[in-house]
Every structure is written in structure tokens, then in C-alpha cells.
Image 1 (cartoon, helix red, strand yellow):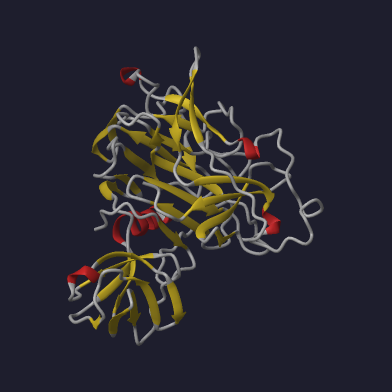
Image 2 (cartoon, rainbow, N blue to C red):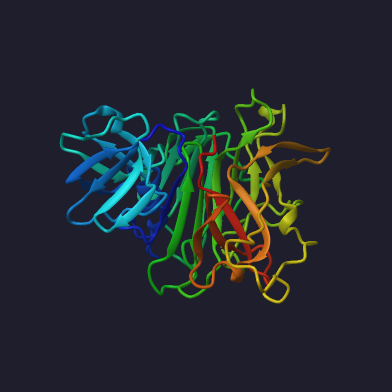
Length: 384
């Protein structure tokens, strides 16, 4: 449905959000709803435009959250239809969005709103298997997952340049020779449904999964086209996951270290060497590198109110790792690391949304260091 480049956030606590159970297919259930289908469709009771602000009313309650992107359809004037980011939620039955350029009026028609998908396609499917791609991406590559295993093992993932069915593809990355067991996980125990957050546009997605019922750290995977430093680059697609099928450490962060060559991040090809296939890459994030002193509760300024002293820095430079050289390729979109421990901003739960200079950021607890849970931020503004 969705074709705009708007960055979207989806969380497991949204009304109508898909459930990531610990059984087979739990991850696919989330990817289907967020990347492809959307969820929580509502018929509006009224839609009124005044002073460039549209106020929507759903008499039975809408369930939409601030900063979510909803798709409006069926409205006259037609300028109200399309993708809109929820600006405010005055109450359980009303929400607002920007309607700049639309004349003051009450819209007519049978008007619906839905949490809008990120504009991907589920190209191939099988029993607890799926392959997704995006028609608007520069690379056109596919993300494939086999989500049929038990919660206690990794669920295999891989990227492909082209696919003919859910089990057959060409130009895999990483190749099996590079990483035979490349996977993600949905849980470390059978205690119940998992907490998750997915942030995506039509070319790239991050999926954060809280693997245990009580732990707050997330496993994170990502896939898609980076923001290449070469405008002509059409092959800069990256994938990050766990590098073993049954990881001994259940929490995994793909963001830690600028020199990670342990096999959890790959780019579809080396610079200028498309025919040679994928290579390992690192994500340069000096703010949370191993040499960084984490700012914790004791040395964080006591008189600094939460959200006033958040330290984040635009980072996420993708650097390929080859035997002969390291080539800087671009940036993973929307990523801002922080040297501040998560406890300063996430006192309960595993994620929150905070404003930085008036712009919303998802703050997530990531395992950048086993003894110092660090904060990462994902920009919820549009990446492209």
C-alpha cells in the first residue's frame, strides 16, 4: 500500500499490533503486519480541518499513538488521503495530523484510517518462511527468513539479489561459505509473547526483540539499502544478524564496535567489485566503541533532567572489511548512538520515545557492552 518514504514506528503495545509468540512464525507475523499489511483499521466518525490541522474522531476509540504513520482513505477533499504522521492524541477517540494547504471544512465520505505498512512486498512464502523486498529500493534485494525453528535456536536469515521461490535465490549475502549459520532469535524462553519494536521506511528496517520476559536489552537485526556516499551506488544493501545458530549469549547488538569482523554484518558487495559478491562490514560507532567510558548514574549530572541532557551523535558509518583495504560506503539510516547508560532515560521497560530539539527519537536499550547497557537512538523523522 505505502509508497512514501516516511519513516514508520511499530511497537508490540500498539492497539491491534501483531503478536510475536515464541512459537514458529512469530517473527514473520510481525514482519507481515509492519512491512506489508498494516493493522488496526478504523472507520472515522468525523474528520474536521481547521487552521491546517485535521482532527479525526473515532467514536469507539482509535488506538493510534503519537508519531505513528496512518493511511487515510475515502475522504473528500482527496488531499486528506494518504500517509500522515499522528501529531497529537488529545484523547482515546481523537487524533490529529498536519493538513497544511487543506481548506477549513468537514470531510465527507466513508473515511478509514489504518497504521500504515512500510511499503514492502512479501514476494515469496512457505510454511513459516518468507522473503520480502521493496519495489522502491535501489538494490531490489530480498530479505529471507526461515522462522520455523524452536525458540531456543536461531531462525536463519539471508539476503539475496534475486529469488524464484522462498527457498531459491541468487547472490546470497552473506554466502554460506562466509556464514553458514546466520540467524536471529525470537525468544530465550517459553514464558510468553515477546516485546518488540520495528522502525522502517520503504528501503530499510530495524527490528528490536526483547528476548526474555524480564530482561530489558534487545536483540537487533536490520536489512536494507544504506544511505550510500556514492549517488550512483545501487548495490549498497546490508544485513545484520546473529552469527551462530544457537548463540551462547542471547542478546546481540549489531552496533557495538567500529571494527567488528566477527561475522554479524555484511554488505552485498565490495566497492566496485559487484561480481565478487558480499563482504563483511563494520558499523563505525565511536561513541559506543570499547574504548568509550560509559556515562552511568554516578557521573551523569545529577541536576540534569531527563530528556534535557540526552547525548546522541549521528553515526553508523558502514565500512566494508576486506583483506586488502577498508572502504567507507555510507550510513545506516537514522542511527544515533549514545555513551549514556540506558538507566538515565529508560527507567522501566525497554524503549521509549524522547524529543531531541523537537524531533522524536526512539530510545532503545541495546547490549553494546555486557556490563554497561547503552542507549541507542533511532530518528523517527524521514530518512530519505
